[in-house]
Length: 81
Image (cartoon, rainbow, N blue to C red; front, top):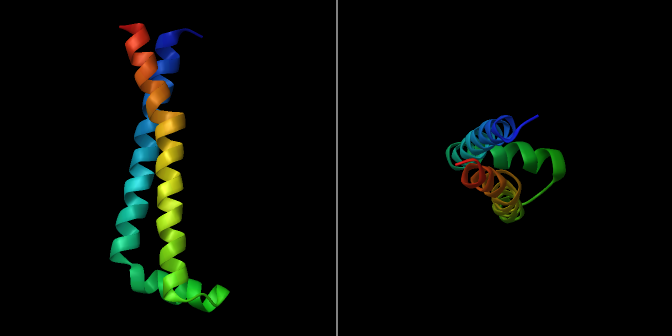
């Protein structure tokens, strides 16, 4: 396995995770009332608790995405140029 294949792998992984993050963020904005009703009924959570969880989830997802997808891909792009 050479660096070009690994770079391409990380590039696709970054693109897929960025799409998933964007989709999740948009769904959290568009379907907020539905998310509140479902999770409120399932787990007995208040709207404030659900909002705090979603905010934390998106923040952690973004940090993990940048750390394990974007930065390694950028490093591989720099190395293979």
